[in-house]
Image 1 (cartoon, helix red, strand yellow):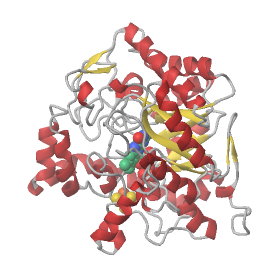
Image 2 (cartoon, helix red, strand yellow):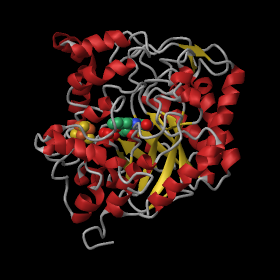
Image 3 (cartoon, helix red, strand yellow):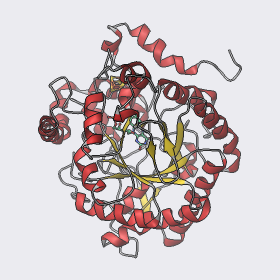
Length: 466
Ligand SMILES: Cc1cc2nc3c(=O)[nH]c(=O)nc-3n(C[C@H](O)[C@H](O)[C@H](O)COP(=O)(O)O)c2cc1C
Ligand code: SF4
């Protein structure tokens, strides 16, 4: 620890029950099409994760890793669906460990929320808690039988066992942002009449059974955490949908999850992905979306509607009305929180967007709480940790923009990077078609070639060492 980091809470070790992390900055989950079509991993993903480990984050929480091919959101993401995937993940974990960085694998299943399910899922209705299509892209689905639910629980548990065998330091269940576990948890989505639907207890049954079965397989001495949307905001942006789970309901779910054996909670927001509040942006990146969203056209029955809204600028106002109304409200609420915490105007009101929700959860559980949502300024991160809103923060886009945020800025006493992330979400809407990276050309002084060179840097070295 240097003189600058000594006594800085950001650089305090965080001890979970079964895991220690050297600082309080976690790389949040960021999915990118870096792997082979069939879900086998590549050197490119290892290069990608190494960038963050080298840049100083204490732990990487992986991108969405499907536990089974029926749960893919896009092809070209590495899966953990079978034992032959273990050697790849072992190699990746070993590389990340070289930088004293921990690796937590996010175990995931899409349910009805897919971008492109892959050729093997093209003609299947996605398995979900419900028969109702998703309201954004219109992905068709069917409610699983109880037998299928039990089979899925087995897939998750086997995947957790493989993650442990690969040397991963822990697993995270993706219970947030509209994927399969949210589809069970959310009162806005789950319309089942059996023991997995109806009351909060019934809706939480799938998640609790998952945690218990994973514990049975990985043992009591392995790190298991859960990512949850603290508030569903299921009527955003589509006002005709039900509201979904409230903060109070999520607090109760977190208490049950803790009893079932989770070691940490990772707090997000929103019952679909993307959602106006996650990842939040000052405005929707229409032009980029119009270029990349065409890959979605055959995926969902509402995709053509969305493409039209993105493609024609005279329709942007209409979509913006739906999309941005909750963002403006939340930014005002967050600005008040920043004022209370003594933040200056240099800290964007889009930073720390789920801090209040994380605090409510943290007050009701014993396990550490990680909070995601816009963080980029060391001063705010320090405040939310010292004032008890959370124990650590997870960062996605600002780390895509500056992989070395921790070592080059925070560890040197700088509050923000020289070329901060603008939260523009162009990385997000590019990701369904193009390699993941920062696509805000303004950050590169308008030099498009320099931006593309940065994006492409992840492909080197190749698996041939070139
Ligand atoms: C390109 C991109 C891909 C993402 N992929 C995932 C994912 O696979 N799993 C997940 O839980 N969250 C995912 N997220 C959400 C982030 O992990 C994070 O919680 C969210 O972006 C808010 O943090 P930020 O403001 O620091 O970006 C993704 C976000 C982005 C921008
Ligand atoms: S494209 Fe770059 S600047 Fe925009 S949100 Fe993504 S990382 Fe940040």
